[in-house]
Image 1 (cartoon, rainbow, N blue to C red):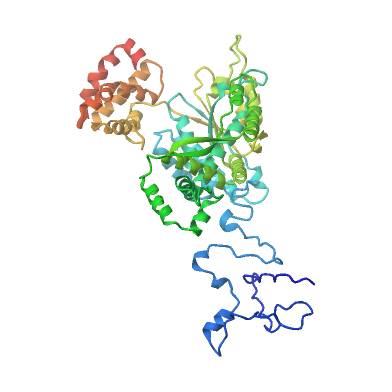
Image 2: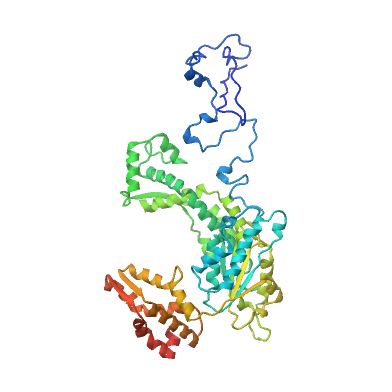
Length: 562
């Protein structure tokens, strides 16, 4: 038999076992049918003295406990005869199926997996941004809590529990959209706001209702990828730093950078390179330019097709993906060091993200935690008494029915089920009534909440209580110029009464009237702030009446200015 090199010994024990001691070294590593030892096969072996601990440690088979401290987070290797255990990979992927893998909705998603979001806590958080409307807040809080409760149900009954969709009825500017938006941010769920008036029946030019689900999945994909990018960004920044150093100081006479430059840098430290690294981190190289190769995502063909009316959005999205993969080119660009570093960091982030797993997670999150807010649903409610040449919007309602009830929509990330998507509809219903919706649509929104119009007392709370109150926003804007404004209680009360009176005289637009009133009140300060300098200006009741009193008294000026 031809002489071959010996097989490398195993580097560790099998799981749950200890390695059997070696046979007597005499004759070890002998060839088949050989009758003598190879010369020098014991050269350099450490002799073991009687009861000598040091030599005994050298002869002991290495085990897991002998691993270096800095390698404690690494998983142990498997022998050829061992099967991969169920928990292998759980430390990095959050479970056997992977932390990003989508499933049948059995697992808990994002913050809904915690029982900290009780209905009372949800209402308390919404109170920080929305004033009043207690009934609407309670309804959405219970709907969000029911999602967490559904995750705790075992067995097939979980799939049978459908969300109770909500329809909010109230005039404009009372907080319908803000409640839904803050709810989505609170739950960190995919949230999509659409206007029902922009959708048309199949066969007419316009958007079809299936695009709602496709857009919701896109929102979920962006949400998941942003989360994953934040996790891998520190590591990606290290790789980008090595690539920047390769551009500034090529290795080995211009060999370029390796696939993972960090490994090469760790193996061969260079004093000059380390000095350059310190200068790069301190910003002393920010004025230098480097030439980098970045992907060229521009596609003139897709730009032309995207501007043509009547092209199906799903087909156009598929064409963009196909042409993007086929025609992807690299383009050399000269950039400043900070810009190049950021661009290379994003390139490394894209390499480190598992896009397939992120897409599966996004689909699962859209199916189990997605929230769709359909605004202006009253615009597609046609009264039976109205007649004319306008196209009936009843077809749009019938197209929405399967989406709201629960169906499967094909997207570029795979089929998406809408059985557990929460739909929140809202409308003012000035020209129509909720009963003008077709009966099937009314049945898909079993929870109805009426929002009350805002009065002067509500405006006072809106200007003072919310975390993002308008008075705080304008004060922060003027503070950038060194101007400090101080609001008195009388001034805020006067502003609230003026806004309420203008709403009574003209169209009631709710809290949006405060934007108009405040912009008119602070117009001179916003214009002259750069010339005023560091100064404190009190906003008093007299100041408000001086600038807004004449406008409120004249009904014509009120109608066209406020």
